[in-house]
Image (cartoon, rainbow, N blue to C red):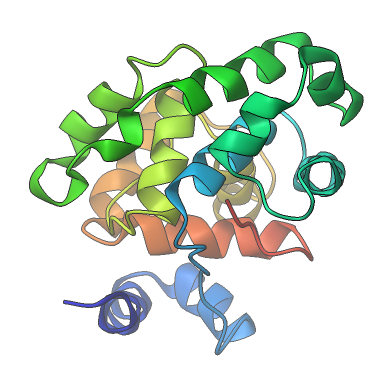
Length: 203
């Protein structure tokens, strides 16, 4: 099944089973997640976006694009010094993580034949790629339909605001949404992100 058909079926099913999600989907009618189609770029953007806001990540990314002459590729990242990478607004660790990804052969993995769990395990062998970053790759590059990034601050906040009136929730409450939205957790996650930010999330 292609991504367009997946998205269409997902919003139909989510709307049928979750009245709050139905309202969010209707608010952003016609919008959907965009895929870049470039594996390294998605991983690099996920590294940039670790633990900072969408707006801040977008600002750093634009400066990095300027350094890379508007196309962020492995070879260009490797050609830049550590200090040059830092000058784009990257932390010391993130600059090292970008270089780690550029030097690895992880992107040669045959993703289409391995499970979500195995893909995350493979990605996490690279220093700098944790579960959250791996999940962003599965969502925004592999278009896996049932990813629920439970450590994502935006997802948690989106659930708290839309389902609990802004009250804080615990891990057990959060886990119930996996069952509620499966097998379309990716689409539900994207709509919750969209409900929080005027800039659609992209990695």
